[in-house]
Structure formats: C-alpha cells, structure tokens
Length: 242
Image 1: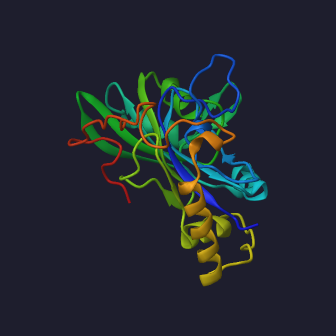
Image 2: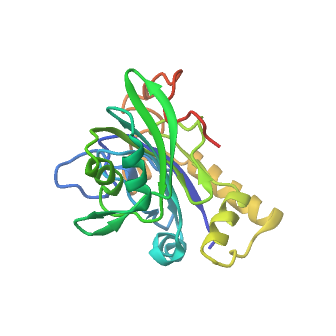
Image 3: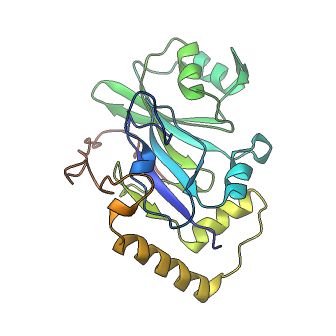
C-alpha cells in the first residue's frame, strides 16, 4: 500500500466525523474517493474553526503525527477584538493554567488589521479541545475566527479554497514522515509517482455516487458553486505566510 496524504481546507460549520447526530455537513463528504481504504484524519478541528486538515490512508503515520511525544507544531491565524497587550503576550508565551493543564503558545506574530479586528498568527505543540480559543479567552480577548494554516512542515497553500482538497507530493510526504521518524513506504521514485498518479486519476474518473463517504461535489456547495472568498487585502490570515 502506497502512503497517501491529502490536504483539505475546512470551513466553519463542518464536522470532522462520519456520523453526526445533528446532521451537520462532514468533511468526509468532500474528500476524494479512496478505493478499498479509509481516510484517517491527522488531528481534528472544532466545528467553529476552519483551515488545514490532513488526511492519510496510513493510520500509523496519523498516530505518530498526532502523538504529543512527536512535538509537531500547529500554526493558527486568529482574529480577535482588540490589540494584544505586552503583558498578555508574555503570559501566553510563558504558559497559562487552563482547566486541563498548562498551555502556551510557542510564538505569536502580528498579522495585521482587517475590518477593525486584529489578526495574529500563533503556534503550539498540542491540540487540546478548543485550546487556541481558550488561551486567548483566558486573557480576556473575544475570538472571532480561528484558522489552522500549518501542520508540522506543511503550510496550507493560499490557492486551496474552502471545501477543496489536494494531494501532497512525494517531497511533502517525506518531510512529514521525517518529523515522526517514520520510514518511507516502498514504491518511491518514478514507479511510486506513476502509481500515485494512476490512483488519483481513478479517483477523478470514478463517479462520486460510488463513494462510501457521500456524493457531494468536491468543489463548492451542493450546486457546484465555489465557496465565497473573503477579501484579505489588509491583514488577514494569509499575510506573512511562508
């Protein structure tokens, strides 16, 4: 089995679950068809959060990247009401005691002003429930949006629109494997690329009605319309991206 990974741009309101009692839209309905296997989510995002999700057909890779001992950094763009004060920045970097233990950001970077609100990029090593929001709220800030923009070595491309997914290439997969000291799968090199290209073409050619995870179009909404892009001309979570 060749190791495959896809990146998906999650929208607010989508759940990272195949079965939701409330009937909310699932990210799995938007992923490409994977024949004879299942996509495994590498981490999760709360229903109110948006941004980068990675999926793989290799549960070992997913488990290693999610395990706290691996120390994989996650980066988020956060829009808050107000401007971060120096003493609050120090507290968020030094550590804040939340209900489930000590949490902190590794770094906080100003990402500019948009429509009267302020964007910051911040990174951390764990993925506790609503951890990013709870850290900001612990200092008295109202959080308007949380968008994951990077997981480990992989940064979400600015061209990846909400509701769309794309395949990671060999180099991108290799960097993630290196992060968790996982040996590369066989069928690398030209043969492996040919196999992956064939698998991807099969997914494109296969009607969505045959998919196990639902038949929603891959791009846009149920009518095939693309999701609306928010203007990010001043500040915003794409400003200063690497």
